[in-house]
Image (cartoon, rainbow, N blue to C red):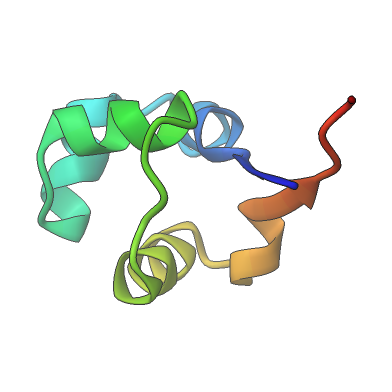
Length: 70
């Protein structure tokens, strides 16, 4: 299974905020946000909760598992 996310969509729906603006809100680097969005980095539980709080939603609305095709 692969961890997927909707951060890019959530950013667009929240006044089209940039990766930089989101990073400042959750106290990480823009590169961290970019890496999460591209699936190259899995966030800590704390960061996932901070993102959910910022977007005013549940963690499951941002992150989900997808079965890998074999």
